[in-house]
Length: 395
Image 1 (cartoon, rainbow, N blue to C red):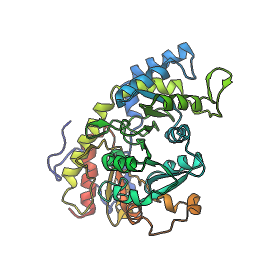
Image 2: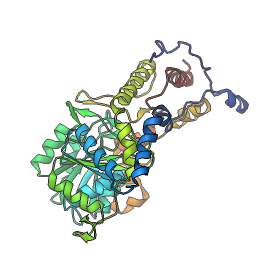
Image 3: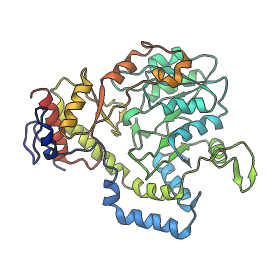
Image 4: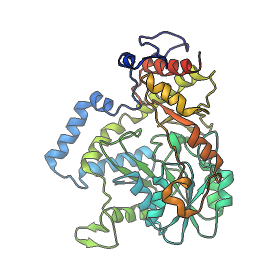
């Protein structure tokens, strides 16, 4: 790939601004937020062959492709075991249930994650306890973690938000002092590293989501638990499959949270290209940083301890909504991740949190906007996005 060398360098697309009349919008270059079909088009033959093999075998539930993908994903994450489930939500919930965490227990997590991080805690009967985040990385602030620990705390659920690993060294040390389990919410961090180690290998267990827009995304829903704990993995295998490992023998009260065989076959194809795709995401991030560095935006910061894989490229500014509207008129699609922090969600009114309890999370919710980010984002696309932003600032 060849990226624009200068913010004002011309590429083949036209720069649009907010002065365009509606009729002009038909002429504006469109830059999607994500491109879910691009990977299929690029590797069509491999996907068709993998899915066709499943159709020929007709082993649609916990078939051979699930077993193979679990083995491959465990090796990729540098763990001993992987258990395929139907979502990242289920992955977190089943980890906690298999650990015996439930009613009367508390699990600490970040206030600014997608609400499923907390919902999974609630689903197993435990209480989510929230802490604020570091304003530079948007990840759980270890300095605030210890103050949130109570005699009821059973585990800590750090979230590797946007693709950046949380500060697992400090979090792990605090958890160890208090004899707490650490469960990674790695649903946005497929392939990221912390001090050279893969996310997924940094706690007792980790949860991944394969929602279609993730760095490793299925053609529907899917998820995975990874762990080095053989007993925990065995427990989750029972829980995901209606409490059973032998047909019609149900040893525990279980659930139907199995990874679909067709999804496993497609994910195995995508896993072959994950590192290369993450490298492309990092190239896009470098280009964004170079072309936007002189503007009054807070750009993502990559911590020295980790390797960010840029599931999302999130910038922050005071007039977020105006910039997003300007970019939309320019054909640039954006997102907000996330506009309402967990403690202010109506569903969690009963937790008793109030506006002002987590100021960094609240500031981020009102200030961040996610720019287009996917592996096949072209240099011309990046040029159009960045020039449109510069145009907003009059540059």
